[in-house]
Image (cartoon, rainbow, N blue to C red):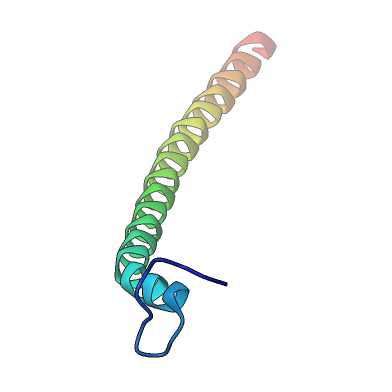
Length: 74
């Protein structure tokens, strides 16, 4: 195979190009992992909030139903 690129010290121009891109790809990977961690944390916080709201709603509904049942039998 004939290329116009200079050979890397190892002799393979593709390896030289890959080693130049490796730090950039590693930084991109680190950023993607960090962002996915942040998204997971936000999702967890949102789930906890809505679980609390739903629990309070069901509790209030249960108390209201109990009071209504007591009042209708008296």
